[in-house]
Image (cartoon, rainbow, N blue to C red; front, side, top):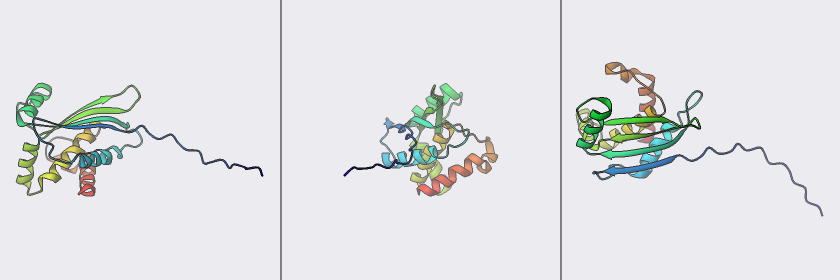
Amino acid sequence: MRRTSTASPARRPAAPALELSVRGAGVPLPLPVALVRRAVAAAARTGGRGRPRLAALGVTFLTRPGIQRLNREWLRHDWPTDVVSFPLARPDGGRAGDVYICPAVARREAAERGIPAREELVRLVVHGTLHVLGHEHPEGEARVASPMWRLQERLVRSLA
């Protein structure tokens, strides 16, 4: 008996996996790596027409002095901030970058807003990742009404 084969549907090659590193520099990790991975993946899925694919990302949690030094050296702001992102376009058209987050500043901001610190830390992971992907928002009060901010908040709610 002869076997016949049927052609399988054409499959698109899978996109290369996201290279993600998560570390604490002078601070313990304030979030489980699995949650950081989910937050980054959720933000990465927002890509679409005209948006590059996220290929590699480093998420580093820093001390107050560490984030202040980064903020001063790269952005000329001499104070500790909650998150700083550095995007990098890759030759293959994808994006890579680094996101630096200060858990101490995030905890203070969460307390001021009356929300859990974990929620604020997830928000900062999403926020930084969106910036690496090229999303932007205006400064000041208008930022909370921006498309990027609305997208960020929708993603944070989905991860809660």
